[in-house]
Image (cartoon, rainbow, N blue to C red; front, top):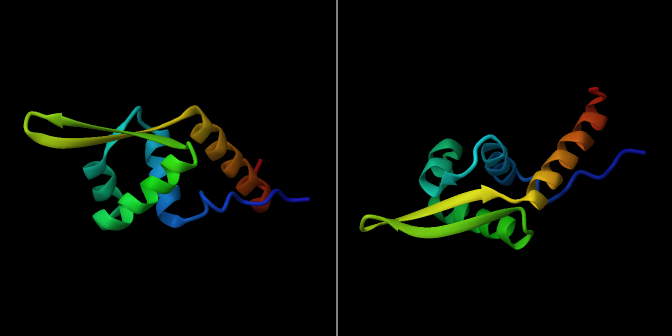
Length: 95
């Protein structure tokens, strides 16, 4: 029997965010926005959902006088992403 795909990660934008963060230690809000071409409002909403699930952490600080928001994937997020990818492999029959 196939595992259910994690609905939180099955969203195109949330999956893109997680994919970016799985490949780097941390990424800025601006970088993620540029890479995903999401609007700031939509990106904020999706980041909040990932934070609420414990999949990412968000740190807000200043770089000089400019605000800087940094996102990073948590251990819980890494595990959820790996499980999602493995479930997808099962669906696609990829070993």
